Length: 362
Image 1 (tube, rainbow, N blue to C red):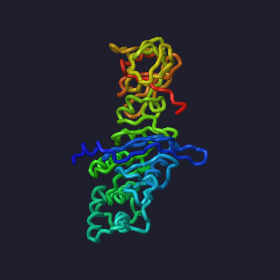
Image 2 (spheres, rainbow, N blue to C red):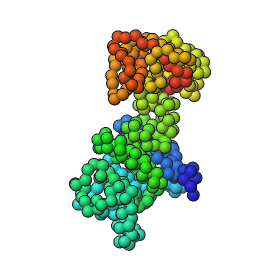
Image 3 (cartoon, rainbow, N blue to C red):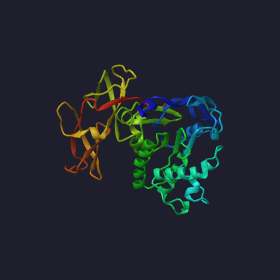
Image 4 (spheres, one colour):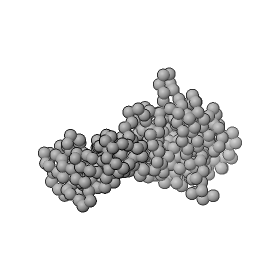
């Protein structure tokens, strides 16, 4: 069976799952499917319920309501060791008294149908080769770097070939450069293994860089689930636009389909799909990199006063005040001189913005 065929099959179904701790509702009637071989990232701020959801899938928490199906089997109340699911934790959870070989071999050694010694050795070697840790078999965790510990934890998690690998912010303890390096390694590893990954993080860069789909979570619910480009380019809620990427939220007056008024200027935008009436106040998300300085053909223009200019590598970040609304434009290359107090003409191309819904009640 080829990969495209497998990815059309649903490996995990979460149906109406809820969980509360005392009076606090952590997961709220949540339903979604995950496809075989998919890399799904659950993205959300601390306290949104993503770790609790992972613990429910792994069997470490039992939901108050709803059901979970793995490869068609109802595992809602199954013990963790009865689920074909493994977890990689942020703190790696390696056994300090075991060397790398024994840490990775541990799931096989305690398995009900324990493989022969030679088979264990072969599978450990294969798992370590996948994560580029061959030759470290006799080393102990105390002598490994953070990135090396993370690789060993992944090798141990995949050696028994689980149907799903759950990853609970596994890169959170790494420095920025190593975290970015490991993002690429994790994505390549997932493709090589063909195992379904469910990854949780609060880091938008990780979510956008690695995932086949991203589910943005808030208050125990998914606000939106889609490809990284869908989440970034077409956020359905103001919260998503602000949380993922660098976005301007423009308060506008709805005129008609694809047309709004902002600061006395008509903008052509994408309709968010909720339906609005002429005269309604709506909120339009426009990414900073889509707004340019100076007039452009076919673009709408607004006038602003520069509040601040900052630099990040080769990117100039210009923050302006446009009729009381803050707008930031990103200029790639340091080829112009701008200072606070300068007046600028800003251009917003057609369909650069999308109408988003307010989400205070979500």
